[in-house]
Length: 468
Ligand SMILES: Cc1ncc(COP(=O)(O)O)c(C=O)c1O
Image (cartoon, rainbow, N blue to C red; front, top):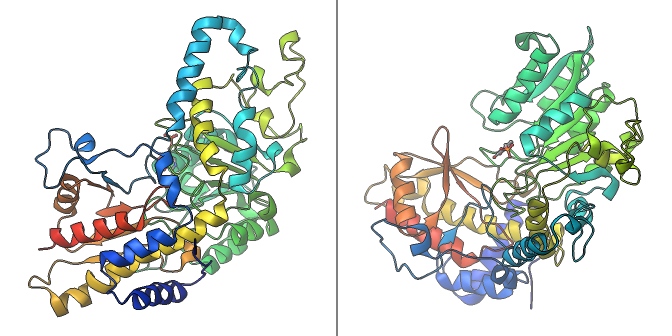
């Protein structure tokens, strides 16, 4: 199978797509282009490893405008990933073990519960560019954001500020605000809320770096998303980390929309701390266990303030119950409770799928898949294009995600010149699943692990119908 090239610019992706279409002698919006791309896709077989709802599954009770026995077009892996087919077997086998072994299940194979976190550490670390000692599964994401700040937000009289961004996800905003309050500082003074330039949607790296250079002496922590939830914009985590460290600030990232979506090198970039949920691109299921990263340079730092529980203690002597702390090294020493076994297993089922590929392979496909979506929209559905061809040219859309593939992952966010709820509803009644967020953003996320080029083409054609 031919596979796709690794492409680094919008222009190279567009010219690749045009050359494939030219080679086939078909137009850019022809289904045959999608079919050719699917035939070239080395990851195409991964789709069969997931449970794909049919249109009738997801549109229960709706008046349907499509053949309901077909697979739906699922473009919301950025919100909740699809269920891997291996999940149910792992969970059911463990429920059986619990039924048969009771408390002895803690020590019994196939997966002993006591060291259960071990089953997801190595693969999680590989996916975020970390060493195993730097990663642990625990809690939910918001809890982990707080635990990150408990350790890495240690304000002093002169250095008490946190840099965050204007459209922070509410959990990040409230976590920062409440941590600042908790330490007795005034959020109005302590929160430096960065906005993009007037009239722009994204933060320019040079502006973020300049802000840190100018105000860094008073900053204790830079806390930003890796990938922005609303626009899909990828922050330049490496440059931001470098700038923050040069001013003596700690730096942490909420990687909810980054883990399993874009290539990360948390260890090499020197990021201090990070947290992510696993139910989006990592497909662990609703409310799945979250991930936590602490850089190796902090692995043996016993002075780092933290909250403790029995799972922070060395597992070899944990059951001595001595109450004399023997702290686990690395990220593991930030655990408080014994982990939820079923959640670790459901994450494991998905990581087993990732184990057969790599973030680089996924990125190669993702760039062409999302580039294909971008090309279809830009060629046919933007204001300029609609003015030339459409009977009703007042209906069009704008992409509010960067066009540079290095500054985005699998998500494109769209804004519409007319009420978006109606579009969303019409897509849903035709079995096309997207989601809506504030300010009329429709988020569309072709996940390279299970979405096909035909999915993207069907989305585009259905969207086109809603403009009629
Ligand atoms: C960027 C971001 N941060 C935090 C959260 C909150 O996650 P949780 O409810 O798992 O704590 C989400 C949830 O979608 C998110 O997208």
